[in-house]
Structures are given as structure tokens and as C-alpha cells.
Amino acid sequence: MKKKCLICNAEAEYRIKDTSDYYCADCAEENFADLSLLLKVEEEAKKLKVFVDEKIGEEDVSED
Ligand SMILES: [Zn+2]
Image (cartoon, rainbow, N blue to C red; front, side, top):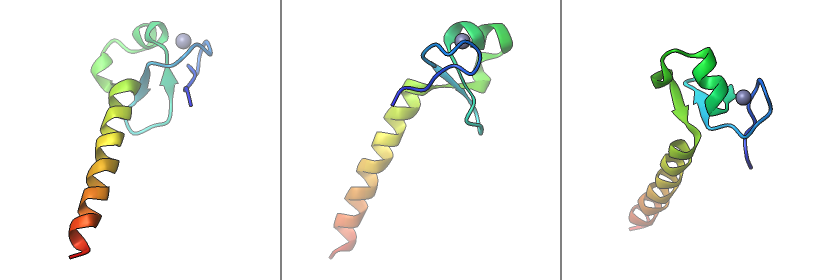
């Protein structure tokens, strides 16, 4: 599911750390001088997938 920018409703590319506020690249740059406060939605999705894969691996090991 694609997230939408809070301001203009475009497809969001960034999320503010520790919140569920999403912004597109344009609005993120306009509203935040420091983009390091923002997480890239794409990268976060990758991390989430890795986390899920690891979790499955752990469960397999603990079966022993
Ligand atoms: Zn926007």
C-alpha cells in the first residue's frame, strides 16, 4: 500500500522518524531543512522485509 503525502497527497517518499507523518520529496524539502530527520519509505520497507526474514529464521532454529 502506497503512503500519501500529508500536504499535497502525492505519493510519499519520506516518513518523519517516530511518527506516521508521510511527505513527498518536494514537501519534505520545503518543510524540513534537514532531510536526515526523515526516513526514506523505500529503505524502511527493505528493513522491514529483512526483519521478517530473520524472525522466520530464528523460529526455525528454536524448533530444535
Ligand atoms: Zn507533498
